[in-house]
Image 1 (cartoon, helix red, strand yellow):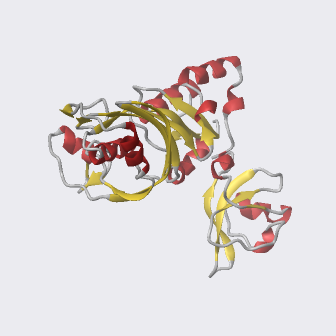
Image 2: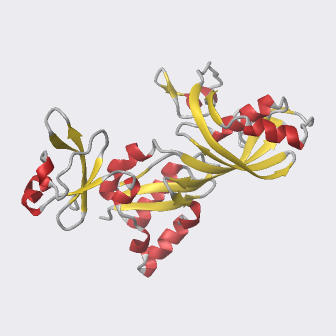
Image 3: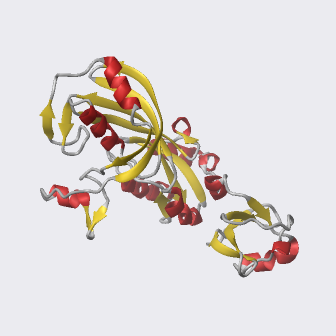
Amino acid sequence: MINGFINIYKEQGFTSFDVVAKLRGILKQKKIGHTGTLDPMAEGVLLVCLGNATKMCDIITDKNKSYRCVMLLGKTTDTEDMTGNIISVNNNIPDEETVISSIMSFVGSYGQIPPMYSAIKVNGKKLYELARAGIEIERQPRSVEIYSIDILEINLPRVTFNVSCSKGTYIRSLCRDIGEKLSCGAVMERLVRTEVKGFDVKDSLKLSEVEAARDNGTLMNYILGTDKLMAELPELHVNSSSMKLLRNGNKLSPSSFDEDIIINDTNIRIYDDTGRFTALYYYDKQKKQYVPYKMFLENE
């Protein structure tokens, strides 16, 4: 079984689940999961976890992401993108300076109302299930953060821009909100996720390329170690006398590590005495020990 993760380029028309299903066939293993859903019409980076790295899927989905978006002004749809039913058309598009000013005004925090066509659950029902049944309910705005917007091209009624944002941000809804502020409406025409956790779209592989790499024997060149998913976390190295405790997933004292230090308030990457990534631990202040959070043993 392959353990680690791979940077996949999700193509238009595939769901994130489709990508996982196809990879299971290509790689001949069942233990595969993705780290953050992309809409079928969206493209770009989808980090896919393999083997014991699937334990990281719930953690990685919380991270910030970057996108390239093409926004079309003068139109609204029920899905807030080009796949939906047209609600309105408005040919009265503001001038370029006004458009730029309105777009840039969204940098920072704001309360974003999520789209009806989303997987958010309300009273046990996913919003898109209600939307498909013709039911629209009131949604409460959620605080999101737009870290930056870089306008790349303006060819009205289209605007292409890069956006870096917090988890939970819907770019479709950002386009909708910009359109509302401009009083002309807007939809998302194209979306490419360009970066997740420092992994860039230029390094991603299409499914056909993964299949080719499997066939020519170069696949493992593209499989990244699980610990690379959390490179921002501090690391500790277990000394040889504590290896049995680590292999059994036991608590560890500060003296179990070469560094013999205490690291608080964060998960910590744990490496064995050969330098191999093995686990995530955290320090329990009451027990005065490092406690296992997730184990990544090769035989799992």
